[in-house]
Amino acid sequence: MSDAPSIPRVASRERLLAWARRLAMITLYASMWVLLLATLPLGALVAAGIDWRRGDGRWATLRCLTFALLYLSCEVVGVIAAFVIWLGSGVWAGRGRAASREARPSGLSGAYLRANFRLQCWWARSLFRGAERIFAMRTTVTGDEVVRQGPFLLFLRHASIGDTVLPAVLIADRHNIMLRYVMKRELLWDPCLDIVGNRLPNYFVQRGSGDSEREIAAVQHLLDELGPRDGVLIYPEGTRFSPAKRERIVERLRGAMPARLLALAEQLRHTLPPRLGGPLGLLERNPGVDAVFCAHTGFEGAATFRDLLGGALVRREVQVAFWRVPFAQIPLERDARAEWLYQHWRRIDDWIDAVTGPAAAPVQSGVASA
Image (cartoon, rainbow, N blue to C red):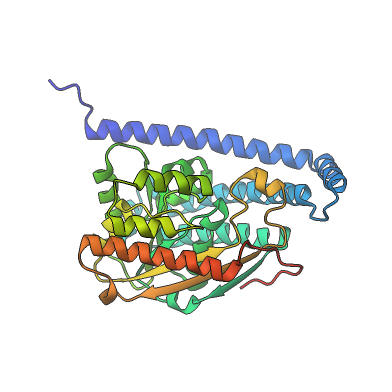
């Protein structure tokens, strides 16, 4: 008799691990929120004192404390709202469970999915618009008209944790487009992303799993039954940009990549060479929808909490650009698709150069949301 675990037992173990993770993280986040509220007056005085001694006029520590309170508040409210949605839906008692599974591939069909989608939009909008006001940021968008109607595949640059909410705010919330995310599994440690993200048609990739075929197949399933209010989003770089990461990746590609692609990879200055597994997997199974590319700049200096404490986002201008490529212009051959993707990534890189010049400079004052 085989010692291999059966699929139901594996699924049951995964569910138990998921509930244990959620219980631990919800407890941690709620405790941090209560502690921050209880010590807020003292914390604000200490933060203001640090900023006053620094004397650069950015008040970055106090702003970060305020944003931390906003983030934890959104998490606590989001988890409570997710519980209310779950309780009111009757899914816990079996009501609507089959209908919910049936609606899952087709995006916004089903009251349960719609409620979770609106909660996701509220969470992302609250964080992003709150960050704009707290850090005195300004956001401008060009090419917005190309994302008003789905379906499409969205290829997005990744520079900071901050850009993960951009599509939810600028596309999903603004234009009522249900985006199906390809996200790294590490994000499951965020309670709201874990709970609501698993209710919606997303996939959390297990990087370094050793089974890339399974991961790519799961990503491809996000293309099932795409409707006019749907889109699939992937970050082709796979991780946040840094100059050191770029050097390591380009060095690793030497001798393992065709000369033409390697030349394009070496020309990139502000972005990482795209990983080909997930993007080419989506293009291979593409049911005939257009591709959309999203370039943005303004988050480059805020990849870590230390960057935020240093004032990297204060008075920063975030600029975003979209462009759409018709399905008929997407190459059919795999090698041609890889070069096509790299050429558009070079376009993103050149756009960043044109917009920022030698380096992105903070705006002087004011907050103007797109």
